[in-house]
Image 1 (cartoon, rainbow, N blue to C red):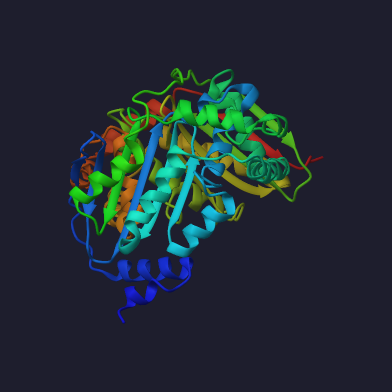
Image 2 (tube, one colour; image 1 turned 90 degrees about the vertical axis):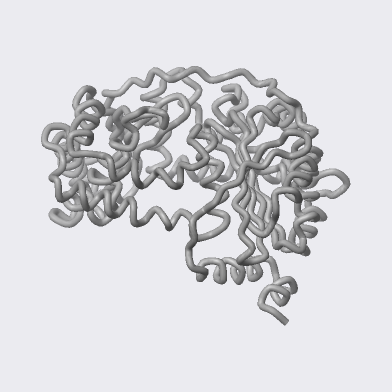
Length: 441
């Protein structure tokens, strides 16, 4: 018996673990992407790989939680959590039991800008897997008992967030920066909005959100284009051509406010925000490299070095560049003792100012580019990661050969590029600063 035939008799988690371990030991090869169009016009990007008998598919629909009505915030989050709680003639228990029996994984999630789905299956059960996905996408049940159970879980999560400094800081930050824009509304909803949601609300949102026009699909594994095309039609061909939802306007983010929340916890959480870039901005790669030097390189960045290594103010400090569909941000975070929060904040702001006024050295730039190009392959060490990247490329309107071009774009970033984008983003606007922690005398 081969390892993979033996895997078919294992429990789901053991099956997937075995397959992924074998997959990750295979020598990396160039990723060759095919554009597949099904008989009924559904497009997907496919990386055919027969190294292991596994098929992974990720997909997304345009629009996400940002289009929730404010009175029903959390609706799309609840939708993502209930789509696999029964479909067609299978109630929640029967649907989940069938997935477990066949070693199939199906999941859904949402961001502010998109709604995501994923499927993982062994090749021998690919037909059954797409059948199970098809009924979840097209015939979800939204049974009242299942909906109430998931609502209770999400409400419990919202209550926990009310005591978590990072969650409080994030909510206060988004409210400060985005004001009346939908991005300011928590994707998780509130206790009252979640409590008010009904199976009818979910059914309406499902019908409004899913459409062929906003669909992007990435598939990786032991499946050919012809077989995939027929399976894509099984899942997606009957969806309406266009969504019934409206659209979200670009955000006019307002930075510069200082917000302080008091919470009786051991540490103070700090969040600093400045304008960033959307993904289609010509300066995006320069900003990406700049951010790696500032705070994106966990153990090598300026923030980590100055905040943790030199002063021991925090276990870590970092920054991220966040390209939403309708706004861009750079966010830096840290957590520290309450009596050293002001010192930590000052050090972080000093490093941001240093990047804006001085910029990195040539040696720092070259080290950052070596890391960013050398570590890029880690995004492709499992089929699931590759499928996710294929969808991300499509959502960012990047070309199908981007994987081949990306490292060259990073290599092309010059010291002047980094200095220019640092000036553009970090020197022209006062940051928004949010702190959450205990009161200090």
